[in-house]
Amino acid sequence: MKLQGIFVDTTTPFDHNGDLYRVKIEHNIGKWNRTSVAGYVVGGFSGEGPLLSADEKTELWKLAGASAAPEKLLIAGVDAAGVRDAAAQVNRAAEHGFVAALVEAPHYENLLAHAETQQLYFRSVADRTSIPILISNRPDATGVDLSADTMLALSSHPNIHGIVDHSGDCARAQRLGAFVVLCGAERVLWSALQNGASGAVLPFANAAPYAIIALWEAYRTREEEAGLDWQARIAPPAELVNTRYGVSGLKHAMDLNGYYGGPPRLPWTAPSQVAKREIQEAFADLKS
Image 1 (spheres, rainbow, N blue to C red):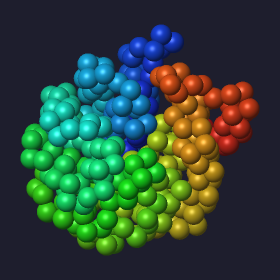
Image 2: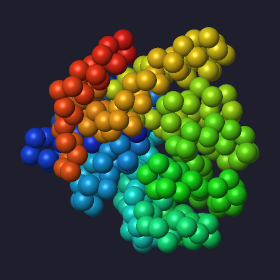
Image 3: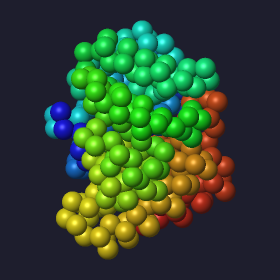
């Protein structure tokens, strides 16, 4: 399995009753299939994964597995406090064609405080899964930035294949050697690629995949001026939907660009009219 290129950290379409919107799941993946993205992370952080029931996640993975083009890699988003639950989620996703899982660090303080326990969690999950796992390093959400030493220790496990790093630390890929690093922060994508990241997992690609692909292609063809230009164009709207307005804002940007964003799941709420106008202006020259 070659983890390289741009992966969409997909949102989850809900109808106005708050149920999975199956037709729109198929619609979005069908449109992304026509781009050159490498694949999809499904049911993860941008997909409001913690707000999905076990049955909903299984249904979501089933629909994504049936809708994705054969060449697109499917990565399951997994967020569970316990090892058994996390491993069970990964193995359910494998039954529907997923080739890897992106596993979030558990969100309780005592576990995150100790590097040994962090390693035990990820190693124990990887020991129990039929497909490889990737580690999600998301310090803004967890309050803890996994150390390079912890990551290097985990890289020796045969079923841990890499990390998605949301920290913005552009040089991390250099320090981790052969361990696969995918960038999870749009604001530093160009620098991360220059420093050895093999690709990216990005929420922004839901609404404007071609902008992200253009930056990736500029990197591949060594067109630095074009790459820096795309980085400058992407950073402000990405900051808007990722930091200020979150998944609700991202879904509105998708609605503007011909994808289905739709409503978020409670307790998230739709953006205000002021926020919608700001998002519309920010995405005006980033059409799909």
